[in-house]
Image (cartoon, rainbow, N blue to C red; front, side, top):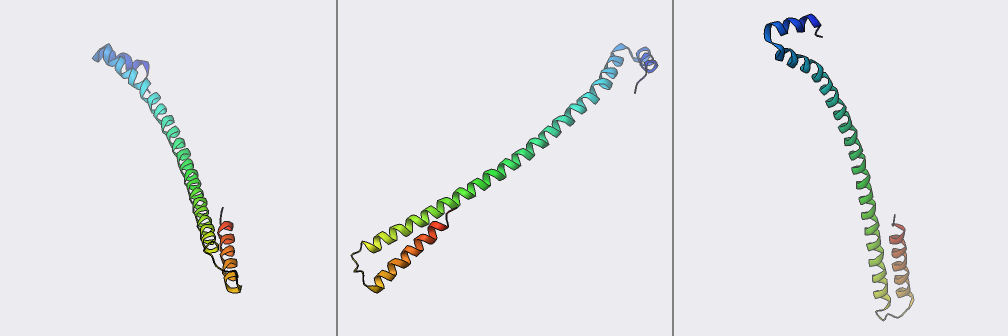
Length: 114
């Protein structure tokens, strides 16, 4: 830390401008360092928030993709069943078992939905 005698001696040797620059640097550099430190901490906190938001968005996207895929699976199973039944098959024992198997497949696809 500068004392008054040092500043007076400096002014006598080098002029008042040097004293003012030295004093300003002595006063402003620590204040600027504190400002930069606080800005760095704020940026770190914001980075952590952004990481948490990114993880949450990724989880939401994955959940939406799973729901979409499950919906597509159940839609496809329903279309297959409708096509199977409407193809003009007679409902004897083996054909009826095949329809029951298709219905069980649809149930499984619907239960997969999140």
